[in-house]
Length: 241
Picture 1: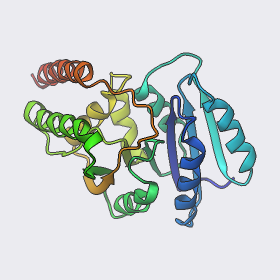
Picture 2: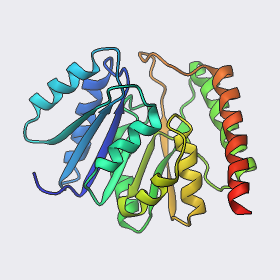
Picture 3: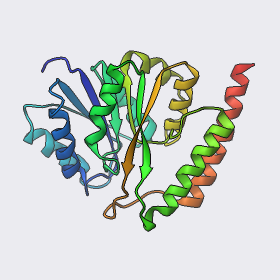
């Protein structure tokens, strides 16, 4: 396989219900870029048929540069994405959530943003009105407001699961991140902005999937994230002294 221009990391945890369909859509978008790419799947010990489906995808696409990294123990979302980035070879590296609640069609826009000079390009989620996702909208907007208030950043959507990077600028930020779980996204974006990286946020529609089993627990997760925000704020203040 040629050295890829683009590396796409797909972090997997219990993705069997939508993995096949999502990969087909992602593959179609990547092929339209007309540049060499690799896809790195990192499975964080899924308990469903995700690993079997990953084998099927590899066998069905022998002409594509597909790699699979399998964790032996569950290590958390942040570490899963991090492992994929450290294995990436492309000058541009990115990831998006496998459920495609934000569609793969935004990949070319983020790649072009990096090519124009951005160090980081993300999709800022615009929520399509769905009564069943109203709770997610309120939590997301409230969290975004708290991040800007407590951490003093300008980024509108740190938690988006759709981020692309200039790989050479990515690695120093990765080395500074401590959280292995979902707070990884916030920590990365805040550290990237404070490091002076050029960040471009591109609006994209978020449509919640009705066929997806959600792991989000509103009250529990809100309390946990607020505690992490306060702890991270204290850490940043100590470093600044």
